Image (cartoon, rainbow, N blue to C red; front, side):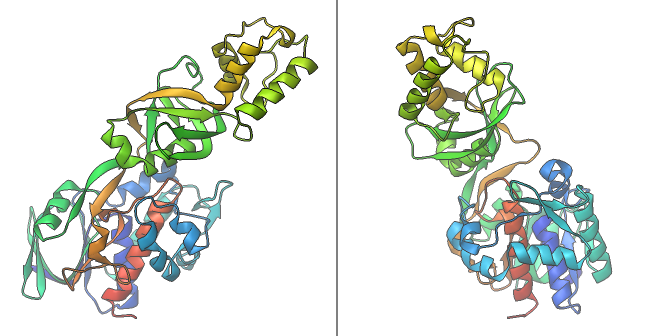
Length: 405
């Protein structure tokens, strides 16, 4: 049975970051990564459309923590130790430069996730870290002060064990058998399935909007993307993250109110529409899109208000103006189901956060068991925040494992 000082189960972002930092802090330690699949870092590879959204340009710990529906309070302390600026520096020290896009997301300047993967694999080779693929773990047992990790092929022993397996159900069962309380998984970061004539044939149109879930306090704003199956974009994805459990409880059957012109409310938009009725009296209502809305969306909303295609502003009735104001500021859409956001799948759920010491990311039940990444009940909105959680947890766990205070 091969024995390691440190064994990391999970060959993803958190697992590699932990392993590399452990070996960097203490090169004397014998470190290995166990991965159940044939390939490592598969989620890193597909993230950000294959560009890898490494982190987000948010440099104040408190503000950064606000992007985590689950984990906000717990991550505040860790972010004071390692957060965005540290991530940028860590990669820069290894020859990987990051760039910031207009929305704050940060990517490698090469625009490919292979840059991050190559960096990690190069570091594991340089540091002598064993990367063992095709090793699904079927059981973990405590053996006096050490651990025995049983894969389907062989057994491994280790003094310090790190679990960084994300939302792998098998590992959650193993952790439950070890006495950890697991919070059931539900999807997070998903798009809304909506069939509605107002958005039919508008796939690809994106505009800034405000979205509220009716009968709840959940609301968000941001770019809203109309898709073939409904609505997506940051404005929707934020709602899906914050409402992950509530929306699961209602089986993804609910309604939303969309304000397509967030700088207006129904009263102020009515005043503006009345002004347009006077100033553009002879002009067809659908001819020019108002409020900087995409033209095709404007036409759909005008028609939904009961205004005929050839109607001029002068002939629009008060009832029709009121309807248009409603469509613009409080358009109600029925959601019937969800879809996975691209190839990225994030879940809410995992190890109960009360059972983790966030100064070290060590289990409160076992002195030599650490957990990092999405195996914990931590998840974030889209934009690089889930990876930042992986980097922060991996770095702090590595320091503790290597004995660095």
